[in-house]
Image 1: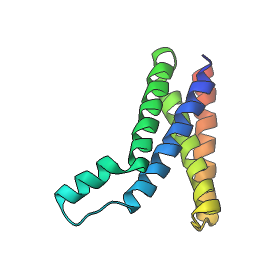
Image 2 (image 1 turned 135 degrees about the horizontal axis):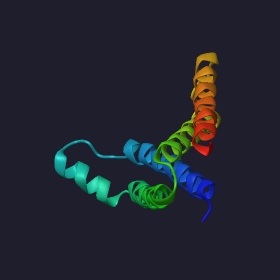
Image 3 (image 1 turned 60 degrees about the horizontal axis):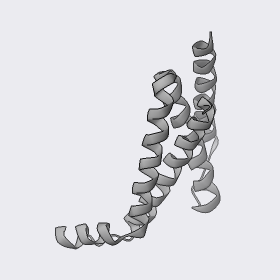
Image 4 (image 1 turned 45 degrees about the vertical axis):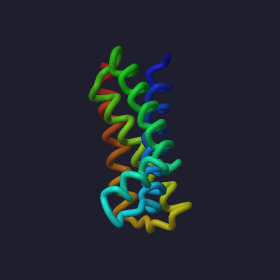
Length: 120
């Protein structure tokens, strides 16, 4: 399978994992340790996060078996960070300002530089 396909599968799984954990975490019963464990085990959102985590791990391990760890990790993280910021701003009403955009731009530029350095 193409390295970039695996990276995008892993990044998408990373995004899903984080969104599911956020949603699941908002519904947890934190009134005590027993209630917390039971609410974690009975949360569909948490189980979706576990499945997403398994897919992330599978795609990541498959990608790093044959490709550079530094590029793969950087790409997955950068793509996930940019995607999460876009989703948060569109659907979760997170405010994105110039500093956010500058930071995300630096992340993308770092990915491009890392990719170029790895391919030479």
